[in-house]
Image (tube, rainbow, N blue to C red):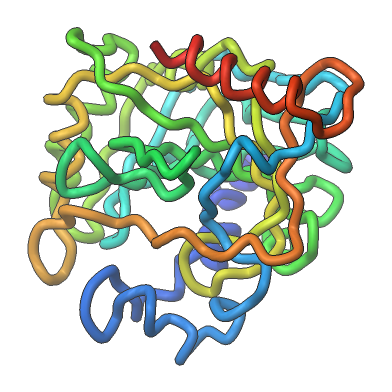
Length: 299
């Protein structure tokens, strides 16, 4: 009984800090991203997210393998919620996925996942690669278990965000059928829908997770805390035009939420790394290797 109660409360604790009680922001006008810093000083920081990853400037690094735990297990019950800024999926029943290795220092556990999209298929993702935007981006937010779900959102290295970009496919991605059905039930702010036997994170993401970029950054919504290790996977998730269009049916307090992405932020003094699996410094050969891998995987 107690374990079951803790399992249900944990995601709500971390969501309270990760934008859960920062409702006075939006993506247009006086509440848009250019004004966030007026209320949330960290949004004016030097290590903000998202960024535009230019492959000609990345550093190659051979990180330890990422270790994924419970990503293959089905989510017995998930809760899909419209919080006015995005749609969030939380795990109510089922094993919580964990990740360690790579650039991460410690073990990180699933908190929630959510999405960012644009008014059309030419833009919508928050992070970009070589100035290229993608129609949809999924963020899997995970907290460092050493700090707990609430403190992790306030401590450097407390969170990691696994970012998965999407690409247009001529066919529907059947792994997203239940999510697409759920979107119809959460079109209004504060609405939610329980979804049983949702599938696994492996189904929603991609199992080819060897190639990725990584950098230190922030939450992309207020309070913009600079506590996030970003892992941006190169391999994209294929979705049809109609599946992506379904996200634009979500409503906010001011009408349809046609877009919810923050513009890219300056990289400043940060480095962006690419997990290569080979030991090389930044050379012309390794830069060409990154570009080639990106093009091959996404064509």
